[in-house]
Amino acid sequence: MSNEHSSAHEWLQGFARELELDAPDDHTIEDLLNLAGVAAHDSERIAAPIACWMVGVAGIDPHTALALAQKYASERTT
Image (tube, rainbow, N blue to C red; front, side, top):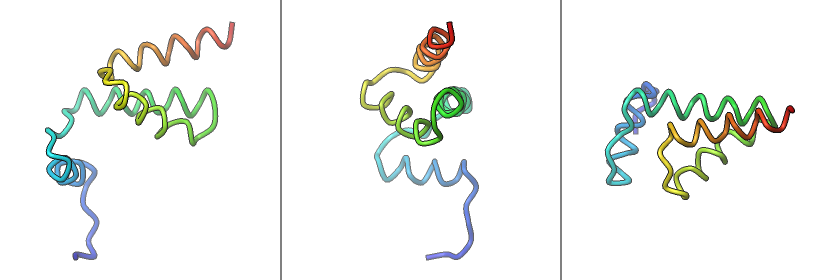
């Protein structure tokens, strides 16, 4: 096992192979990071990874999930 850290892109590529999935493209990564940001800023930091997990379990594409998270966060502040 190497002591060197991989880039996020390399890590995601390798992990995707372990899961027998295609690695996410740049747009998907951006949507997931934005979703995590909405969850973390509207709640506590722990909400970010759990929200992303929930999207995977629900089988919703990250772009749609981001829109739903933004809608939910916006409705909470009104």
